[in-house]
Amino acid sequence: MTITRRQAARWTAQLATMATVAPWIKPAAKAAPSDRLHIAVVGIRGRGKALLSGFAKLPNSQVTHLCDVNTEYFPAQSKQVADLQGGVTPECVQDIRKLLENKSIDAIAVATPDHWHALASIWGCQAGKHVYVEKPCSHNITEGRRMVQAARKHNRVVQVGTQSRSSPHMIEAIRYVQSGKLGAVHMARAFNSQLRRRVPAVPDSSAPGTLNWDIWQGPAPERPFNSNRYSYGWRWYWDYGTGDMGNDGVHDLDIARWGLGVETPDSVHGFGTKLFFQGDTQETPDTQSVVFTFPGSPKVLHFDQRLWTPYHMEGYENGVVFYGTEAYLVLGRGGWRVIERGNKLAFEKKASFSEMPHLENFLAACQGKAKATCDILEGHRSTTLAHLGNLSSRLGRPLKFDPATESIPTDPEANALLGRKGRGAFVIPESI
Image 1: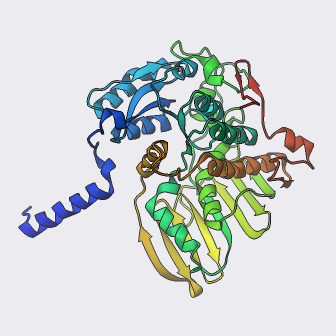
Image 2: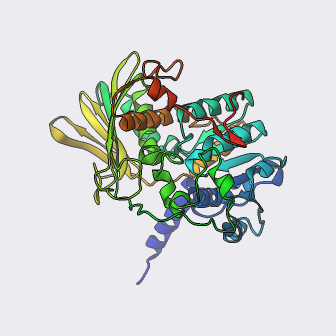
C-alpha cells in the first residue's frame, strides 16, 4: 500500500488530536511524587482489575497497594500495575483492616462484591481515606445512608462508579434533554437488555487455601463455601448482590434520574420474575418492569430489564429513552439520537465511552480542584431506586416510600428489609 504525504499528514494530525482528547490511550508521564495520590485498590478481580489499570495509567495517581481476600491474584495483578508504573510494584495486603492502618494511602478504590461496598467505604472514611466505590454503592438503603453520613462527617470525597456522569457525550445529551428542545419531558425509560449466562447448582466444598472465606463473607450471613457464591454467581444471590438492576441497571437509572431532574421516589411498583433462568440457583430476577414516581413531580421513571435477549433494545445494550411532547431522545454508551414528530430522525451522534474521565474527576476532587461528578449522595439516590425496585419485585406489591426518613412506614415487612446489621466483626456501624 502506498501512503501519500497528504494521507500521512492527515493521520498524524488525527493521532495528535486523539492524544489530546484521550490521554489514557497510553500511560502519560507521572506527575511529581508530591502531586500523586497514593491509591489502594480493594478487590482486584473484575472491575478491580480495570480500576488498578486505570489509576496506574494516570499521571496524578500511583497504585501503591492491592488488597484482596484471595492471595492467588496478587502476582499477576501486581505485575500488571508495575508494568504500567515503570516498575513501581504495589504492596499486597489480604485484610482491609490492616490496609487502612497505613497512613501513606490517600484513597481506596472499592471493587469488591456489593455486600462489602458500604463497610469498606465507611471504614475508609473513618481512616481518613477518600473513596472511589463501584456501583451499586451499597447492598441496601440503610448502608447507603450511612455512607453519606461517613463522607460528610469525615469530610472525605466519595465518588460512585457510575461513570456516565463524567462522559462528554452523556453530559451533552442530558443538557439537550433539559434544554426544552424535546418539549416537556414527562417520562424516561431505563432499559437493560442482554444475554446473561446461567448459574447451575454446584455442591458446597472447601474454600481454596489462598482465600480467607470469613473476610469475603464480611457483613453477609455466614454460609459454607460454594464456588457459585464466590465466583460469577454471587451477584445473583440476595445475600451478596443486588441483581442486574443494581449491577448494570443502576447506570441507566442514574442517567434517567439525572435527566429528569428528580431525586428520591415516593412510590415504586415493581414486577420481577425468572423467565429464562428456570432450574438454576439464581435468586434475582432475569426480567423486571418497575415504575417510580416522585414527590411534587408529575414525572415517571420506568425500568425495563431482560437478561435473556441476544439482541439490544433501541440499538443499545443498556440506555435510557427520554420522552418529550415534541420529540424523544435515545441515549446509550455508543451515542445518542433524537426522533421528532412523525418518527423523523432529527440527528444521531456516535460516541466512544471511557471510564477514564470519571477516574480523573475523582483525583481532581480529592485534590480540591473539582467537585465529584457522582458524589455519594447522588449515587445513593440512584442506588435507592434499584433497592426499592428489587424490594417491590420480591414482595410482589407496590410500596410507598418516605424520602425524608428513607423508610416504608405503612409496610412493616418491607421496612424491615431496608437494611441489615452485619455479622461478627463486620457490623455496619450505626454511629458514624
